[in-house]
Image (tube, helix red, strand yellow):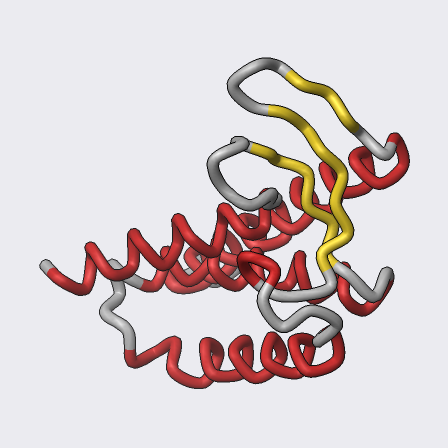
Length: 145
């Protein structure tokens, strides 16, 4: 008789599917922005294609290799310390990891990160950036409780 899968096995599968799904969505939107060189204004916000060679808010311009290594180190730390996070907080490591992977893929394939979401009162960003910010904020809130 086949052995019934454990709940932990399903959790890992869901973790991987969410991670891959987020990375695919990020890369697909960046591919569209890059291939169309999008520039569309909607009044309150716009889609504006930007090649970001730096980090958040344009700091560390042309720091691609350095920033790629930081991404690899942070991903390694997330994997190493994953089990030390409370179980109910671990889910928020998924968007953070997916965002880091998405921007790392850009740095490795293009030499820059593709940004395209322009709120006009904030630097231009992308889905990966949003995933990182949302994941970190949710993680902080969850750990605070």
